[in-house]
Image 1 (tube, helix red, strand yellow):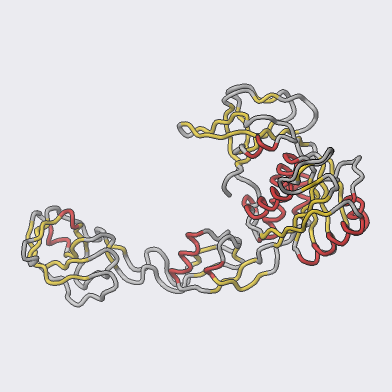
Image 2 (tube, one colour; image 1 turned 90 degrees about the vertical axis):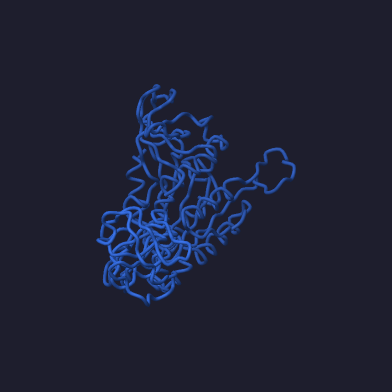
Length: 403
C-alpha cells in the first residue's frame, strides 16, 4: 500500500491547468482567472453619501441643535448644482454626489425639517467626513483587485461590473465524462432481476463533478463488451478533458474497463493505505486524464473527494489550498471507534458548531456500501491507524459542504 499523500501528488502531477480563453464577465461564475484583474478607474468615482440626510459643513453643526437653511436637494444619479456654504444644508439621498463645500452628512434621523422644508434643525453634531464615501477609497486606477488563480464568485462578478470590465481571461471549464459499465447495472424504477443493482455511482459522480465547478458529461451505461467499452472510452477522451470510471480497479478485479485501460492507456493501479477507497487507478488516454475510482458507492465518493476533485480543480486553474476541501479541527461528541489495520480511516460524520467549537458525531453506518450515511454526512473525520476516537478527542475533518 502507498500513503494517501503519494497518490495525491501523483494525481496532481498528471493534471495540468486547461488553456485560457476570453470569457464574458457575466458568464464567468465558477471559473478561474488566468491573469490578474486590474482596476481601470477609481471606485467610487466621486465623493458620495452613505446615508439619506443633509450635506453640511461639519463645523456648522457644533453646538447642536442648530438651524440651517435648506438650499437644494440631490437624488442619486443627479449632479449637484448648489454648493453648501456657511449656514446652509442640502437634502441628499444615499449614493448622491457630495455638493461643493460640504464635508459631512447628517443622517435624516438626526434632523427635524420645518413644515415648509426650507429649514432643517441639526440635532446632533458631526465630524468632517461623517457618512461620506470618498472617491477611490474602494479601488484606484492601476490597482490589482484579483490575483491570477481567483475562483470567481458572485461578489467578484459584481466588482467586474462596477469597473465596466466585460471580458476577462479565464481557464476553460473542464468537460468531465462519467461512465458506468456492467451487465449487473440497470437504470430507472424497473423491477430488479436477480443479481441486478441500480446504477447510482454515475448519477452521484456527475453531480460531484458539477459541484466541483466542472461541466459533467454523461457517457452512459455501457454493457460488458470489450469493443463497446473501448469505443466509449476513446470517444470520451476525444470529447472530454477528463474521464471518471467507477469499479474494476481492485487487484483481483477482472473488469472490461480495467482490461481496456491497461491496453490503451498509461495507467497506474494503486492500493492506498486508506479506508474506504483503498483501490484507485489514475493515468492518461492520450492527453486525457482518467480517474478510475472504486465501485462501492461510498468508496467512489470518498476517492473522488480525496483525489479526483483536487485533480479536476487543478485543471480549472486552482492551486494550493483551493484544490482540497477545507480542513478544520473538531471534537468528537461521541466515540468513533475503528480497528488497527495499517490504514487511515475517513469516518462519515455530522458537523455542528457550539460556541465556536466544531463538534462531530457519526453520520451512521460506516460500511463502504452504506450510501445513505454518506449522503447525510457534513464532513470526513480523519482517524489515524489505531482504535479511533473517544468522546472529547480531537480530529482533523474535511468539510464537504462549501469550498
